[in-house]
Amino acid sequence: MSSTAGPYRRPVSLFWWLERRSYLVFVLRELSSVFVAWFVVYLLMLVSAIGGGSDSYQRFLDRSDQAWMLVLNIVSFLFVLLHMVTWFGLAPKAMVVRLRGRRVPSRAILAGHYALCALLSAVVAWVVLR
Amino acid sequence: MADRITLEVARYRPEQDAEPVMQSYEVPLRKDWAILDGLNHVKDNLDGTLSYRWSCRMGICGSCGMTVNGEPKLTCATFLTDYAPGPVRIEALRNFPVIRDLVVDIDDFMSKLPTVKPWLVRDKQSPVEEGEYLQTPEELDEYKQYSMCINCMLCYAACPVYALDDKFVGPAALALAQRYNLDSRDDGAADRRDVLSSDEGVWACTFVGECSAVCPKDVDPAGAIQRYKLTAATQAVKDLLLPRGAR
Image 1 (cartoon, rainbow over the protein chains, first blue to last red):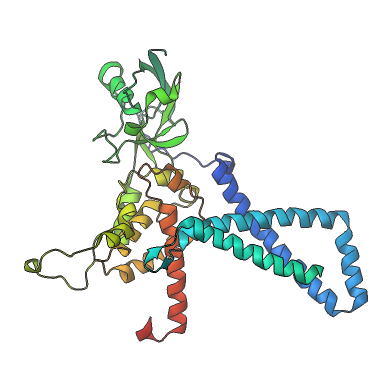
Image 2 (cartoon, rainbow over the protein chains, first blue to last red):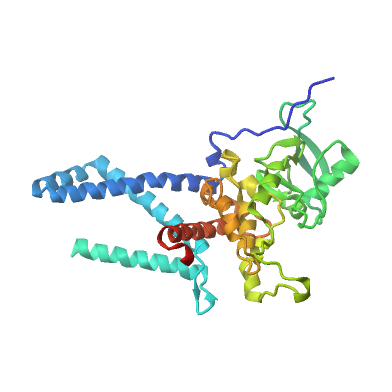
């Protein structure tokens, strides 16, 4: 009598995240946290440089002017945008808001998030650029 | 339109195969035939040894889920003509152990389902003489979408989190928990909380969203899970800040 194999378990490919677009977006979104963290560190470096006086601030500006730093910050910015878009996309699913007993449509919640983001960005831009 | 189409079917016969092998069958391509009709044609006329699950043929029983050209599908609701001229590749549902051919072992899901208590939990049962537990149409709308789940497990087959960690409670079970949590007649939310708020519960979900994309009943398990995350987080903050009586 031949021996019988048990149930077959399909192995998960190392490249499973390339099988579907949604899987790839998910992995990129998870990766985006690293770049969000970098922006936090960069902001702290800026604050510390300002605290250290004009010489240290100038050194910070010179460092930020280097090509590799610019590339890093542009890539980080794109990942932070992806982070934002995907999180905003989640918000209407997680939030059920009622106004006068009626459920606020998902699109309105999404629009609210983008409007608030635009407003805060405008305030920051005004503070930085005025 | 050609009048025949080739089905490439994954065969796994544990007594002779170390892993699934593909076998081709040519079946009539008819406008009104779903993939399941093609498989039934194979079983009845070409090869009686082919094993697969099916029952209702109308998207209600949830037993004929398979992988069709790489996508989790209910084979009774997926038409052959959509894959013409073929071939159509039919494999067992992903992320579950294959017992034979297209039949998967669903014990994992069946053991997880009762842990979320997917039934009405009442603090106080009213006597039958008092009649039904009444509900307004608005209260029904709160959970109706989640009640459409037919336990077909396509969402588990599409979920990469479940593929990597089979301890994850999973999309359908979590959505069904929400179906009862949001029911005005139910008092069981606190009973379900430990399972739902655990690391293997909603927090294991990373919102890939593919469960909702493949759901044949538009249940939106991903939405149900994200909604519970907010509930669980709010509850945790309340537990921390408020005295016991005010939570």
